Amino acid sequence: MRAVRLTGPKRLELVDLPEPTPAEGEVVLRVAAAGICGSDLSCYKTGVFSGSVLGHEFSGVVAQTGGGVDGYAPGEAVLVDPKVPCGSCADCLGGASYRCVSALTLGPGGARDGAFAELVSVPAHCLYPVPSGLRIEDACLAEPLAVAIHGIERSGAKAGEDAIVAGLGPIGLLAVAALRARGAGTITGIDPVEVRRHLAISLGADRVMARIADVPSGASLVLECTGKADLLQDVTNLAAAGGRVVLLGVPIEESKVTTMVWVVREVSVIGSVASGPEDFRASAELLAREPGIGAIITRRISLEELPAAFSELGVSPADGKVVAEPAR
Ligand SMILES: [Zn+2]
Ligand SMILES: [Zn+2]
Image (cartoon, rainbow, N blue to C red):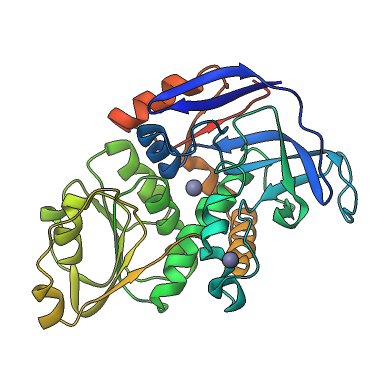
């Protein structure tokens, strides 16, 4: 089968791999759609998970089930929560298995092969049925939308509360959609890329700005979705006194910040990673209820086009979500 493997920093290669067979408790899927995530781009730049096929945001059709798998039959459309928690660490035992180190690193598209391939084998516990109303080609948005929903849950966002979303890449755009569905007040989006600002308006933002400096006033809730270390101070400065800033972006560089501003204005800075099962279910339901969210997918490409798309996105991202469809 065709697959795209990471072979080192900035090296993705189209390769021919043997078709996977499902291990005990696993299911082989024919991949329908697999989104490129910011963390895939970080792996691409650094070479982390070299040797693996990336791609952890995906949907597909059951091709074959392994021993001990009940409830899934060939032909069924499924979406995938790509986390494989260890089950024995403090996070797993404490009910937060989504942030277990194994969950974040050992799943498909991490240490094991992911979905930038025609077929992928995944543990059956990762699967959710695609709800009716959701197209399988858009169901790969369930994972990143769940990440945005998790951050909003962590913030304790209230109905009618104004919010600022800094950075309108896929996570920021999905956060706008999730805030709107939750009944937020005025939603302000910020991004230098015009296409992304237009998408934010179509997903429910009330106003959009190209630059942080253009935002006329702060808000009690700020979602940091730029992932840019050098913007952290300016983004957190958007929080009103007593407000919360949720960090959804994942910068790999260090930030230089003056925390005194947060102290004297009593700003709460909240980290948020991945998503729990309730976020995932809420995400799939929201996608089925609001199929227009699929508009954030601005480009659908073949596996052959994937290496070039990675190098473009690493330099100047001008798209919403880019999704590979291995059947193309
Ligand atoms: Zn992701
Ligand atoms: Zn664990």
